[in-house]
Image (cartoon, rainbow over all chains, first blue to last red; front, side, top):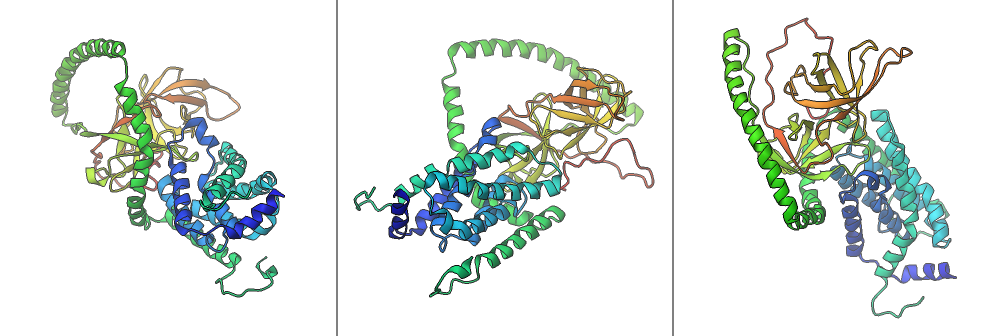
Length: 172
Length: 302
């Protein structure tokens, strides 16, 4: 029932480009917080989460090109190789756009399970580029993809709540 | 997947698959160019101007926290610190006097021997803006850049030893690769017996590896490694690491030796950038030193 409501709401919610840009910016800032030590391993990729949310809910507004641009910014800030994040985020956005009809059929908990392989794919792309150039993979890096998938439901609820027009009565 | 859609009233441009291929190729091209050539450094520093204020913004809370923490540091600890520092200062100034005498003597002897004078290294203080956010790299960003005449290849240290090397310079920031980074190596010498070796980062915060030393080599726990200065990048005689583990296993050609960095690689907030790059005389033709591998920490910086 609840997923039914979610789908119905989707086209009723307004598209606000400023809000999309602001949410991506906040996600970038969260990624750039000075994470250290064990927290760095557990850090979810907020940018990937928010990008995937928009690619699934507004696939015609946020697509691969935006994901790529955001990835380039992430590369500059992270001092990683040019295009490394961009490639991972492009793949993530593509998978989101291809699978959004299927995944949005499920409720939020099931969605998290469906989303996890997509994150794993994006993380793997990033790690493979690193491995090709440096010859090693720190395995704790992949913990981040699990944490990201766990955060899928909270982030979706938060963004849906923020997108709901203020004046309209609460439908749930 | 896109063909399953029944009707397309509006032209949405190329399909997602085409876009993915385009952007994936573009990213791979960028990665390739970034690894092989240095054309992209100007673009990177241009984009860093956009990113810089945001990074400052994000760093602000932790900075504020440190400042508040400093403000409320208790009276007692300040007094204790003060006494300790005064004590240290007396000891140090006595040592400094000796140093002056020794320096004079050394200079005199060197002029007598007509050996190249050892230069003093001017240094400047820089503050850490960021510690590694990337699990793959051990890097930090300092708040001094080309505006403060920082150059790629300069050495970064704290009060006790080597911390790393500047590998990339932005207008207001510089990126430092720590000695614990997996791709970084420092040519060193054992202080006790002058044995030369190369220390490699392990990607772990508190660990370095001393590779390619034969099993029979004379190394003990607690030996101090200092830079040998042979590479022409690191000035000689700066402390780098201390041996913490030696394993002589005859099954392997090389001994397995681990050491811990002496400098607080992950602890400090202020660091020193040595401003002078060493100038070496031209290497004579056909005479290659086989003992030390060239410094590869500046693989991309130089």
